[in-house]
Length: 525
Ligand SMILES: Cc1cc2nc3c(=O)[nH]c(=O)nc-3n(C[C@H](O)[C@H](O)[C@H](O)COP(=O)(O)OP(=O)(O)OC[C@H]3O[C@@H](n4cnc5c(N)ncnc54)[C@H](O)[C@@H]3O)c2cc1C
Image (cartoon, rainbow, N blue to C red; front, side, top):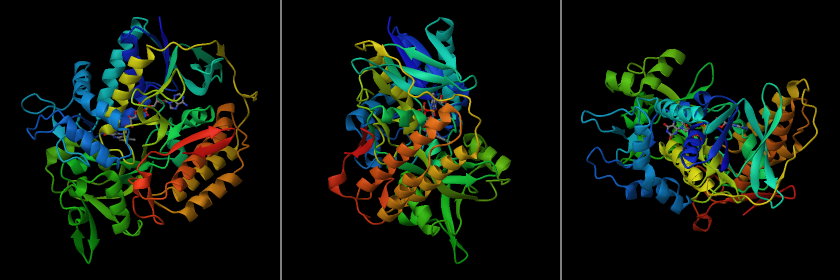
């Protein structure tokens, strides 16, 4: 029997575990918390597939073309071909395992508009699509747990990869968050599904669990990363007393419009600038437009839902209704919502091929931590799709894997596991996120990026904290530097990467940015 280790239990990790076990593997599923607390449950607006239930003659080919155009041509085309081809089957599978997608009067899966796509292609469950998918996957997973096919290890964080003496990946070292116990898991293949590296940008829209440790550690252990300069800013986020929160793109898909006030008049600027797709232009375009019309945030931009009917806002956009009422004390049927872009999603990450293989034998990656589908800008609704598809493809390939050699198990350093922390940790992490927010904004330039790099070089990472956190600060500093160096090396503007000193896109850069860590040095190709 093949043993597969899956790290991370959001949508990608759950899907990989279910399919690996259905393909005959014994699965160890590791995560710091239960799936119900993963970022995947936050996903609101929907998941894309060319189901064509609206009679618009949608097709897989158009889904492919929109994805490549949205990604500004630097997506892995083969991977996108497989993603878009398999999407309708994925919606069917998710429905069969119990995802309650919103349906139309004919009983077909209803579809809504989303950015960067001319046809209705986004399946949804109100505005709680992630929750519905996670709950169906959790049920499917539990069934296999009760049959002894999947074993869950909750409370553990990834520490490092374990290699064989032939340099193939055969396991992971993990640390228990409460007891600080270090545990090694060995097997025939490892699937990493640890989500985006949110902590690099501080308190962003996603889950704080996704701290970027795993991606950064893999990098230092020889795993190739790509497109780290491609950070998506979501156009419509709101500031609440808790944190920034997201107003789903579905609000614009259902007819919401952005405006700015000039001379006492409302200017619906997206319609003025982009008559065809207007507010449904890809996210990078909408975020830049908001930034520009607001003069970099000096004047307010609003999302107007007041013309929509009550059912649309209260039922189809239920989570938006709740956020506005509960956190903004605002009735979106009566008042427009003040919005501004914020860091949201990482198109870059662990480089995989279309089979979700990394450059290390036995090691796979899926979901937001991995990089293949989205190029320079992800289309809304393609992330949930990519997470399910990635999990599926990883599982299919990983069960065929047989690593060679014997494990060489080692936890990197001898560190006192029970150090009492002080403020040095939050200071260092705060400094890293300040640097990233300042130098890697919607617009960047050489001067700002170099300044960021200098500040990172000066940053003292000798913090007084627990073992995991000490490691994390050092690793995030390396990942931050790799991101800034990637941004410096792309001397053009493309998708989410906009350089004021190189404002045009350049055909010579119509390719991904690869980055490796070699003998303590960051190397960009
Ligand atoms: C507010 C919001 C709304 C969104 N709406 C949509 C939408 O409508 N449509 C869409 O397509 N996408 C949407 N997204 C994006 C989408 O939710 C994510 O990209 C997707 O769910 C990622 O799934 P995942 O399985 O890769 O990662 P996650 O769901 O983030 O799961 C990561 C897992 O890894 C674990 N983990 C993290 N670090 C470690 C570690 N060091 N060791 C071990 N485990 C670790 C976590 O605990 C978790 O179990 C939205 C995102 C946000 C934040």
